[in-house]
Image (tube, rainbow, N blue to C red; front, side, top):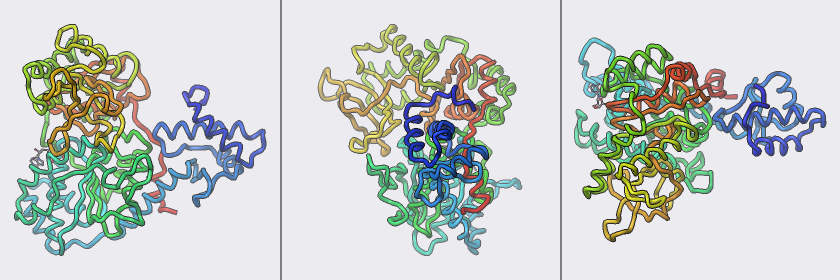
Length: 545
Ligand SMILES: Nc1ncnc2c1ncn2[C@@H]1O[C@H](COP(=O)(O)OP(=O)(O)OP(=O)(O)O)[C@@H](O)[C@H]1O
């Protein structure tokens, strides 16, 4: 790759210069070494755990005296991969600890077959993959259940928890977690109803928790410190940890989570391996499902929606671009190319929310209505970006007199928090609505819904950094679902547009997905794939050194 064309930052070059000055290299070797380090720093920020390097580059790094794998130096070379020490350690610890966990697989308990028959009664001769998933998760201390939306991951895991409690001599202490507040809220909502349907005693149901926490909270985040309260020396008390939306968990967080488990603990990861990888480094869930087939069960049948959205999602995922385009041409109202102006369409969709607002509806009703529909974009800036769409939808709604934009904060403004604030209990991705204060006329407050359904409100000036959210990026929509989704793609291809991005956008929709894209761009986007450079697969295969 030519560095000249890369938009690397000043931080990348400052980092490279800093290290190069501390190397043992001759002056003549330094420019090449700095170029390599700039590339490492840049690619790391793009989500790669490491970079692939040539034999000559390996020799250069070794000669620099800055690499070792004992933690004392800033770089590590492993085969043809160059790492920052910290990320190599994350991979190393994660692979090593999961292997240690996997070595503790237990033989199947005698009662397992009858319990599986009780919880997963056979309905036909076909293999019941949910039951197979339970079979794996009961025997293996570490397991992954992957599948698209509505394939029954939550239903299955609740049954697994019940089976494990039935088998336990003493009730297991269980923690349920997700990477974001939104995802935690969704899991919490569905756990409750899945529990009610369990074919078991109340005593067993009562041993299954209903509250879901964020991973940061579970591990004891102490911002601004990057260290958690719980780690190998001060492990979590739980016998079993379940993590939903695991595709969003990056390498560092996954490594810290596994580090914080007590030695006898179990871990079950739920997620969709085909979704976008985490924003930060790694493609951990995808790497694990690829490397650990015995621990992984994939559920493929969607019980929530069959039909056209699933067909579209599957075609995109399999990179069948032409077939996916044909699905959009079929005229099924659940899945179409949008033929009208996207701004007018979006404004019409948000009108019901604003009409309810003007008729005096309460916050929960408004929040529920606002969450029915969402515009999703690939990029943050440029034509058809989040910034562009937000500005134009707001303008359209103002022209139509559905909102009265008096300043940054106005009645009806929907916002998304973009920075965590533990003290205020507001987190990146939380959605709030700016509404008149119920107590005082003329005063504005921003209302949010907590995971337990209760409502909290803040003065606009106290809300952490946030942005208007008629439109949001597909990245930010991970872990959320909406009845109706409008996906607006840019006019020109860019590296962000991949089949994983489109798959993630489409699978956010429960009933309708409309798309704005031209065919050439659609075909190009589906042909692009996220490819993260990592050494995790190799570490699982070769054994941690
Ligand atoms: N084996 C099954 N037979 C019939 N219906 C099922 C089965 N498994 C799950 N369902 C139903 O399918 C719906 C989706 O299930 P569930 O919420 O467990 O899926 P999920 O994979 O966790 O979904 P998501 O990740 O999209 O929230 C639920 O209404 C559930 O009751």
